[in-house]
Image (cartoon, rainbow, N blue to C red; front, side, top):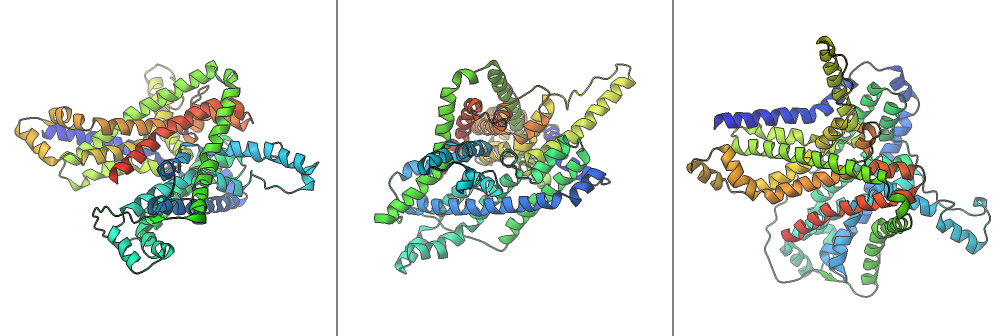
Length: 542
């Protein structure tokens, strides 16, 4: 028994160290001597990049809050027609990659787009100098597009928090004749503050790590600086320094969110009741609430999806090519391998924590989950640094033993990309497996040991059968997130290797959105699966 636990312990610590190695490599490399490229960037463009990043993150957080918080309260606390559909529909924009939404709105709102053409024909304008129209390819445009895609983080967590609140508090507010606004301001909002803070921190990290949207809109941020420094200047050291700066910003975001509610303690006793305390909106209030919710869904998901489907139908013969099939297979293969590895890691670190009495046994779980907070572009730098070192070490060994150079067998293959996907999304698998394993009573472990089962037999006959569904969901979530990953794939994919995400990005960047529509629709449909799982879990919880 002790030998098996020791094996699981050793495997857990080794794997967790490997997963945190990219983050450590970034900080280690960033402590090196500054070169001319980094000093030049700091003295010229870096202040602008930092300012743009702050404005982008702040703007997306604010607009996502304005979109997500009212819709969450309306869905949780008000009776509205079509609410059963709306509560699902408001989550759907998460399935739409932000850069795809950005391409579509640019196609609509550019000078040669259908909206400006219609306005010129309607009013007889002949040139751009005769009227004013907002430019979509600006910082404001990037903030708007990212907010339309990211607000569901706030909506989901805030809605769940509103639905979990003690109903006796709401009844007391009614008895004290509090208006809906007073009830929201004094009771619902303060109680939901921790969930809202978590949602906003997720929005901030996603906005900070976005590359596809800001690159297409020509907004220079720290993420684009990392990309340009690596590929434009071929300077990995300077890119690592910028990446370390971004990691510090992410650490500050997470720390400030936790510090802001360090003394806040909420204790709520829930009980069931048949009384429906939701507000019944009538007249103009009902139609205003419905219009608000449906317009958000329309602009963030329905209208862009209709445009994509239209393009995919019209250009199906041009899009359905051998390249499309090959890149689809590439995405499926890399995502499948990443999902399998992530689930295996999740099982090992969770089982070690369950079977070990050591308080430090939780550390491999937490260490292995750190990569989820790292943007894909930054993570690519962190992965490339140790992988290149390993390649040099392997080549030195083969030369020493007389076999000659074997080449870049790790950094020049799919290994680097799959490694990055595992580091990035192992946290998803670990969380899913942990929640399922916690539902298995420790008494089953004791009964298994009483019957003479060792750890391998206990895992095979007791835990894994009970966790089959949880492991499947964990693997599915990692698979789908890996399918949509753009930043790491752009930087780490092997030569002449494309995924669906990079395939769509390349076409759309060349202003060929029509040919990118079919793979984009496939990515959106794949992205709907985790949203269905999340929403169903929320419904079962309430």
